[in-house]
Image 1 (cartoon, helix red, strand yellow):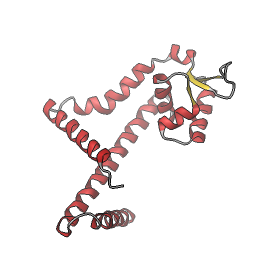
Image 2: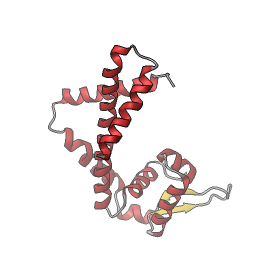
Image 3: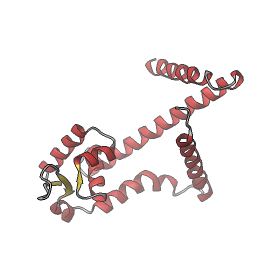
Length: 177
């Protein structure tokens, strides 16, 4: 019931915004297509989140913790500000994740001698010694994408990639804001 109300509200918002820019005959079609795209993206996001949570749990972490580990592996010595910006999370959220990972010995904090106001974050040497983060990331990617596309025809996968690229470019180039 609630889902139906949200869907109808989403459709109404899309229709209202479209009426300003499109001829009347295309409003309904474009509105329905926009709604369908939004629903598909939400479904994809939910599937990604579920698979990432499953992968993180396998290693004894929450998905945000594993995301921080992957980011720090890729960008060692990053600051909390930089990490929170890169992850698109608030500084306080990332700080809490870092605190929990530091208590477990996964993350180290370093204060540079030349600038005592910043803290550099990295994966601890002990954690790196006991865990192969590249393998962890590879498992996630194979569980997440590779296993899904491995039985598909390469041309079909290329078509998906091309269509996603085209849609991404269309969103990026849309200057109707």
